[in-house]
Image (cartoon, one colour):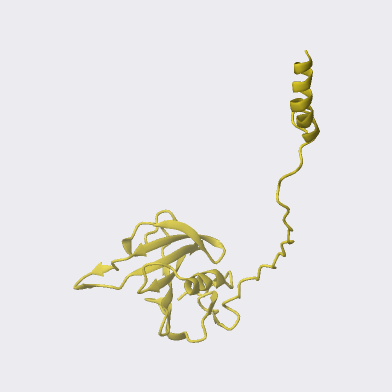
Length: 189
């Protein structure tokens, strides 16, 4: 029995002093790191692209919109056959066209016979969007591609038409969002 006690004292006692087999709390072996506080940068508001733009107002046709400084009014028609304003620059080519159709509703109206691609808004109202990536073909040739935003006001359909494009860019989105109606009583041609 002495051998057993001697064996236990020689082998088990050193293990107990080292902490093996006892219920001491383990020493945290996780390396320490210094946490640097995260500094939140304020998110800058996007620059309003329209701040240096011109405002075009046509009281006779009942609308206003903003346009880039390099855009100019090319032609204005307001007679019994045509009611439209043509805008041009080196980068932009668009028009506002007004068509009288006292028989159609927004869901029945088709710009140049094109079906509605999707719905959006124009002048604070629901608008149909018509896309013509191949243009409009009539007679001997076809027009360039276009995208038209059309909305109804009384018996009139107002269409903001961007020519020579297949997708709407940021400048055109700003033109669309700046479009507003300015009077309830539109002078009749």
